[in-house]
Image 1 (cartoon, helix red, strand yellow):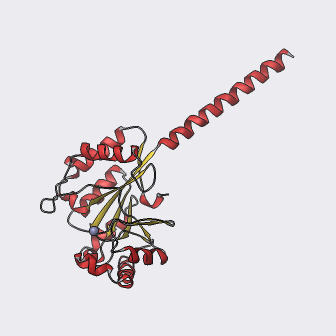
Image 2 (cartoon, protein in one colour; image 1 turned 90 degrees about the vertical axis):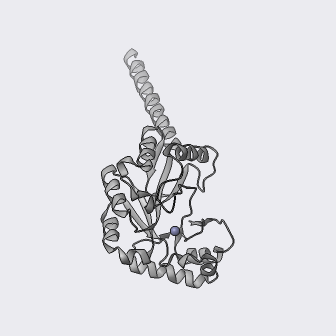
Length: 245
Ligand SMILES: [Zn+2]
């Protein structure tokens, strides 16, 4: 009898330990904050550095490419597509020729421009970002910044495209390519947005940057500093945009 009771106690205590471990694991999982690094307007001067840095760091990133730029740099597109850490998405063929209001006044034209880009780049997905607009169309959820572009975004979504806007932009000086704001500044903003639930999806933050920020050596860049910061903190994970919920 004593042995049976003893056995039971052991059995019960092992259950408790297991379930405790499980709930700790679940909590840790819940607390993970996902950061998605996205780079727009490539391929441009800087794409090769992105490719090298990503391979060295095994860093998942997503690039939104413009067909017109890709035509001039087919080798860069190939590098991106062959890199297992890089996802490649659609940022339109023409980038609206930087005349956004006119571009978005013809939703059908926008759709055709995206299809043209998908074909040009031979993309295997329908993930994209509108040029000059921070609009979201993800699994039936949506968000807009201005009114011009809404009809085009809706039409793209109706045709199977997922559109990502951004929760935070890391801007750069267009002349020098230098980032505006240090890695520490951006990290603080990331923390603030996540803690105040100011992202499109809770605990997930999409960061927008540009290929141009890679005009300088990655090793000395503010981007590397940000990556190192994120890696050094508990509870942050740099995730691939394709896995966005
Ligand atoms: Zn753009």
